[in-house]
Image 1: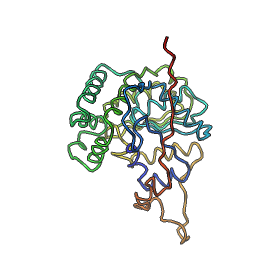
Image 2: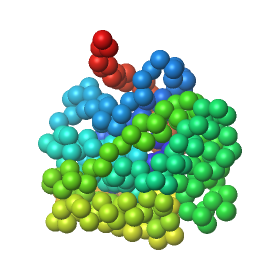
Image 3: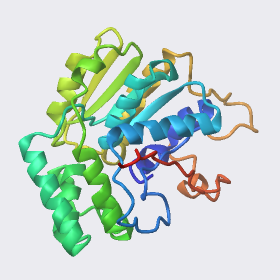
Length: 294
């Protein structure tokens, strides 16, 4: 959830998204709140397994279709889900997405992180390296509240679970040819200083340009949702207008109406917490069917 708090705590975004949508958040296995450490006998899910778990969530809640939003690895999983279930995805909002197999540099770094996590847990070196994937150099140097909060969240994660997720994404395959078959609307945000910036550019070039829009965000890392959430507001609003969704309009003379969503914060972040929204954060159990061994 920490990848989306900056966007959803932004009053203007909240007024647009919560007014029009019921939002379902999906965590990868072992990353939900209060998750226990995964055991060695649990198999590492492949990206296809993770995409199939998205299908299980859709089926559990009876969702026929949805507009999906994902960041980095999450964007890859949702893109793969869209490739496999074209009829269930109305649109994609992808932030610093990846769509190809790991390059040699990423392959080497992932192997290094996996080994460090296995032997030393969530060490400072691993945390700093992961944070550099998320945020721009300027924000990292400033040690802003966003970076400190993310560092604390990494401390709270089970290192074995983070290692398993890296192993899962490390197995990803190239989706380039499959992406050309998508015909849903796609909005891509690419942080200028993201290590995956060229991946996002490549992806936008391979998609059908009639349905695809690319927004390059200057002076920003991969997590545009956290570092510059306001830069996403207008593109998302225009994107959703294509589906007939609009920002709610309140009459200025109606005293019973809330403050205009365009004015500075009209929604307190505390009101958007899971507890305040009445959400019971009970994870949905999904499973991977393993083949019998002979």
